[in-house]
Amino acid sequence: MQKITILSAAFALCSSLIFSQNFRTSVTAKEGKEFPKVDADGKAEFKVYFPDAKSVILEGGDGMQNIKSTTTKDKEGFWTVSTSPLEIGFHYYWFNVDGKRTNDPNTELYFGYGQPTSGIEISSGEDFFIEKKVKHGKIIDDSLFSAITGGRRNFKVYLPPNYGTQKFPVLYLYHGTGEDITGWEKQGHLNDILDNLFAEKKAKEMIVVMDYGVALNPEEEKRPDDYPRTVVSSKNIDRIMVQELIPYIEKKYKTNGNRAVAGLSRGSYQALLIGTRHPDLFSAIGAFSPVIYEGTSLQPFKELPIGNLLKTDKKPFLFIGIGTKESERFQDFNKILTTYLDQNKYPYVEYQSPDTYHEWLTWRRCLYQFSQKIFR
Image (spheres, rainbow, N blue to C red):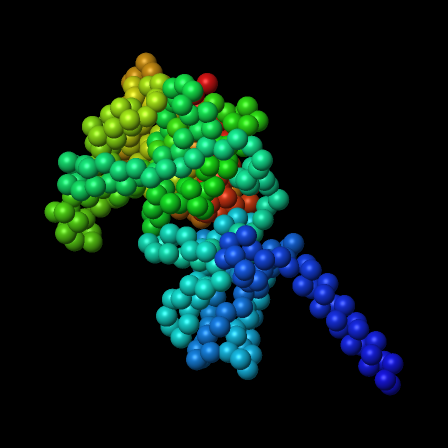
């Protein structure tokens, strides 16, 4: 009996070791933290200390809504949440603690859903956005005062590794709804994507301006909720781009006059609006997970002058990217846009990100593909 007990204990210990070896701490965990953990199948484990809580429920954004999880609480007040396999990519998440949305104290916070939010990365096995031993560019903070909104606007600027040796083209890049100018740097890994591409000679070095995707003056801020804020804000961003941002960037930085504009989700609408209003100013337009606002079934492009592309001799390169698992809403927007372009024989490149939702792995892949095709 004793031998069986010893063997059983040894087997249990061995199983425990194997189990723990299969799980690795998430790359989004704070330094020194063990959780959250992810295994090779994408299953995740979270361990959080909420000693007085009566209920702790894992919740999250796109790509996490359909997961199954089990939750247990130990005598010390630690809650352990184990999940079914998560989808590949970057996912925002939080805990519902007795009805209150609460971030995971173990992870870094990322600005999403309009506030700092926990995030977890489920590896796809790709390394194009991982930091490597290559020559690095840098991201700096900058700002300008906008007469259009009556306030200061902050933005980030990526300067390529060889900045200072020559003049470079500029990509103006927008984030999505509920995010801010930190998104492309932190969740998007823009600097690593571009550093790696430049080192491999797969893309032309460029400056990237990560502008803020909201632009309302004080009076517009006070308007009721049914006010078409996104369209008004985007039209203001268009004016800021042409009248203020481009002149500021081209005066301060070493640019060569070649420009592109791109964005994700809401930012795709802004990129399309700016690019189609001024096809003479931009050599390329990138729409990642395209969105169309204020359209109708009869006039899908009521507020988006996509027809301008057909009237100009200068036809910007057009890139459209989407995740294959994005929701029906985004697939419909994508279809409306590509159908119009096909019917009017306007050339474009369509990219489908395999097995990804409306999240940052989709948009990293889009940037990776798009940046290789522009400024050639």
